[in-house]
Image (tube, rainbow, N blue to C red):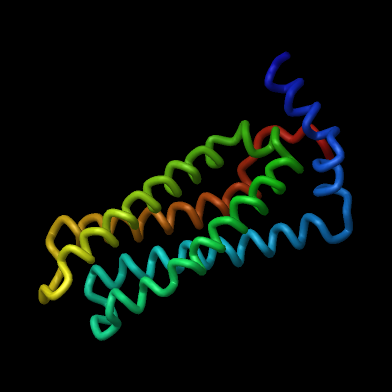
Length: 163
């Protein structure tokens, strides 16, 4: 079975048809995905900016209280994103911007974890080390990349099997 046949088969599944044709499914999933990604990206950016010296009066311990919310945001973003993907798999999976979004996302999450770990280890110091600041700056850029790539997905596809 070719990839195009697989995409066509997925697009004929009940879940794919529901995502595309239900009055409320696609808009609800899109809003859930946008809000949950805002929570995840916003939390990641908040941590990175704090490591870069913004809002120095906010203790890292206070930022840690956002971790459960970010976890729920990540879960909701994954589920809603997966369902949106099921609606239009050929459109997304043949688009290099889709892959780029996940490269940025993986880098942003990895850098965020690194910045969090290093910031905890550097607790009590006046500022963050150069390595932590460098990772935090890259993290900000990666979150911007995730957001931009996600928005560009709506406009950059080359293949759409369903109409």
